[in-house]
Structures are given as structure tokens and as C-alpha cells.
Length: 96
Image 1 (cartoon, rainbow, N blue to C red):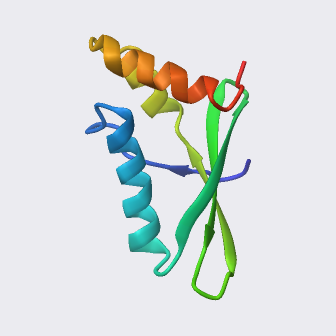
Image 2 (tube, rainbow, N blue to C red):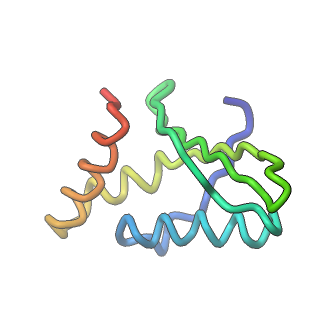
């Protein structure tokens, strides 16, 4: 994917914060768009999260996020629950 959106991972400590950061990005940069679905892929050792958003007129906008740094940070977390949460999240997309 060319030019994926890279979010600031410094303050991310868990999966919920990552989801909130993505929602905030969509709300601030694409007014009226709401995420309805997402997919995760791994390309060139990078995790790419593709989000399908729609507005009230059902106009679709696809946003592509590079979440590699966030996932790397969460997978190295000292919190066992956080590590398991991110592993389960990745597994839910059938990523090898």
C-alpha cells in the first residue's frame, strides 16, 4: 500500500486506545465518516489495517493505516493481558 496513515504510537498502551485513536483520526480528518469494517494484512513485515468508512449518504472511503509500530509496542508490553489481547486481535484476521 502506498502512503498508509501512520498514527502516533507513543501513548498507546492497549488495544482499546489504538481503536480510539483510529476513531479520533477518522472523526477529525473525515467528518461524517463512520467505520463499518476493517481488515488486517501483513505486507513486507508491516501490519496494514484497512478500514471501510461510510457517511450518511453511503459514500465509502477506504483508509489504510500502518499499525506496525503500535502492534510491536503492544506485543512487547509488560502486561500479559495486553499481549494476549493484541495476539487475539491479530489472530481474528487470520494473519500468519
